[in-house]
Amino acid sequence: DAGVTQSPTHLIKTRGQQVTLRCSPKSGHDTVSWYQQALGQGPQFIFQYYEEEERQRGNFPDRFSGHQFPNYSSELNVNALLLGDSALYLCASSTGTGFDTFGSGTRLTVV
Amino acid sequence: GIQVEQSPPDLILQEGANSTLRCNFSDSVNNLQWFHQNPWGQLINLFYIPSGTKQNGRLSATTVATERYSLLYISSSQTTDSGVYFCAVATPLVFGKGTRLSVIA
Image: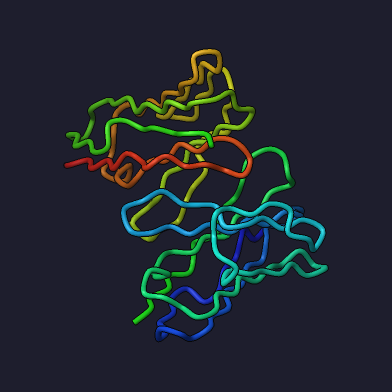
């Protein structure tokens, strides 16, 4: 049973560019959440998707957007990248209750 | 919003030693999880423990919801226990800043 799969694992982008990160949830999970983890900090909630709708959103600008597909997989898009967007981006899936299962993350570097 | 504080921020142990990590939170919660983040960034769920006590091998956790704290116990520590331990509460998860544990052989 595959866990949460994220791609790519590493990514280098230039300021001002756009990036798309992908996440496949654990089998049986229908809720996907995205988190940003800056160096030395705990993860911070970006948004959560359920039934292809954004259900909750953290304190992140509109440059951060997402999508959930009918197969429950999800994408995180970030426009107009800033140096401060450099971080580990984590995807977590769940059934909405109980514990969250995290992927290995995508490490984004903006230069 | 809810605040999560973890202590200590850093901990260095000799292999075989025991340790206790603490998580305080500012409001009632119905979701509390402990995670271990390995050097590659993977967050591994250790416990889902909104209340009560659970044990898994050398690890155990206790949450006293009425007093808004949780404890993670690591016994007979091993070098593979090194990494950052996070407490996270609520839905969606609100994380503390973590405890960085280094176990030395």
